[in-house]
Length: 109
Image (cartoon, rainbow, N blue to C red; front, top):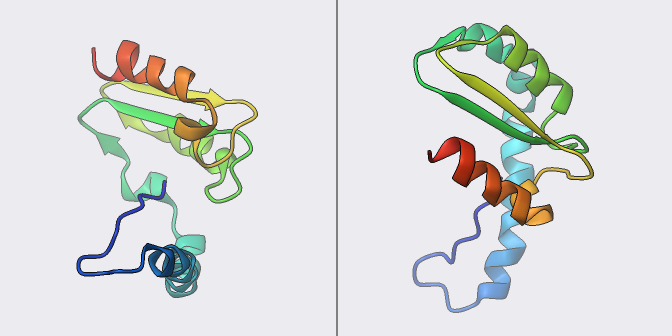
C-alpha cells in the first residue's frame, strides 16, 4: 500500500510525486534479495491478535500466492483472508465499496 504525503516544506507537489517511484525503486533495490530469501511464515509463526489479510488476486507487487501460503501456515488466535478478484495492489481504491464493507463488518466490529 502506498501512502501519499507532501514532504514538510516542499513547495512543489509534482516534484514529490516524481520522488515516490524513485523511493519505491531504491527500497526494492536495497531489500529485494533479503525479501526473496525470507519466509515470513517462519518470522511470525504465531500471532496472538486477530489477523486480516486483504489481498488483490492480480497483485504483482506482493505475491497473492505467498499471502495465501502465509495465511495457511499462520497460527493466529483469529485469521481471515479476503481475496479481491479483478484487483491488484490497491483493493481499497479498485473496489472501495467491498473494501469498506470488510472493514465495517469484519475488522472494526
